[in-house]
Length: 477
Ligand SMILES: *Cc1c(COP(=O)(O)O)cnc(C)c1O
Image (cartoon, rainbow, N blue to C red; front, side, top):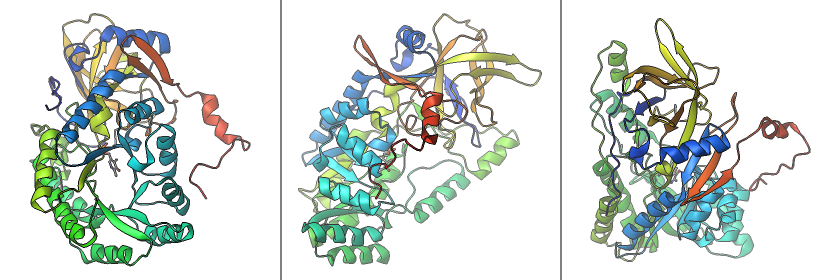
């Protein structure tokens, strides 16, 4: 039942610091289910760098999730996290399959409505929601999960004006870390960050109790949901369960008092195609000294087991009949997109051997998390001999590096194509036009091929300098 785990292939060691690292597979792009010939054809027709989206893979991921939820024996629903990838083609496809949407801003709200998500199956989350955004949400019947205290007053005013009774949720934080490492300094940082998080209100705290009392005292608001969202790329299932138990304890108490309709555990489900460095300052210092540590074995998160376990935990706490909701982003879309990029330059210097690609951090923007993505050569047969390369993007700044050191064929040269894997999550929405413009997305659906997001041009960028460009962004007052 669980999603098949792709063969992870050989893994490069993770880099300390902020550089993006990349690992290489041996089987020229095929091992992750992509047809290298087809990828090369897309690059030929549309240029590089270009994202390729596999629509059927997206459908399969959505179906798998809905199967798991449908098998729980309690009402269960999934809200797709729009910020993870707001491509309209992708959102329409998920909406048509019956998924709901999780939005965290006014413009995401408008985009999700336009993509056809049922507003009754949408939630509005996030630490800041403007009065205008809240009014739009209430008008469409989108549930608001309260995070900032000021939202209570704003929602009460909106509801009083329209004479509605508005059902709301409240965001709770468990205060426990959901990732771990053999590096004790990493664990200390993770604990501190979880205890200090600004998202949500700590379970069991007097601050949460007083927020709940304020909602209860509000004549037009009804507290009906509990929301949590712990982190992203979570792979330590037992830590996630331990943290969510605190949220469920709080939910059980609130259910007793108010009668909840939903417990929403958020997203964050990790995928096997990405590795995050789990290194703290201690590990970074050891790496600088050349004491290379063996990277921790990365566990695999089984969402079927996780959701089943949570269902049982809810049952034991008397939360029968209450819906179990989740908000996956990355888990649904990470491996449904890959990027084809071209080698533009090969430089063999006394102290380094560089391959410079046309895809930079502006279109593969994960150097903040140090994520490791696989990079496989495609487009022609390559020499069996591999050697160590440093791989960079085309941007004129130091940090545009995909891998400080990775194994790739010896005979890679300008014009060759590489497939950068798992580009479906946090690429499109986080990409920018620093030095180079943003990439196109081409969708493949069986034999069909469709350009679903065109590449940005310089004219697109500078259109913003034209004062006549219509401006009011949806959701601004
Ligand atoms: C970002 C986000 C998600 C999705 O996170 P993933 O790690 O992509 O699954 C879900 N819920 C909320 C509130 C978020 O902010």
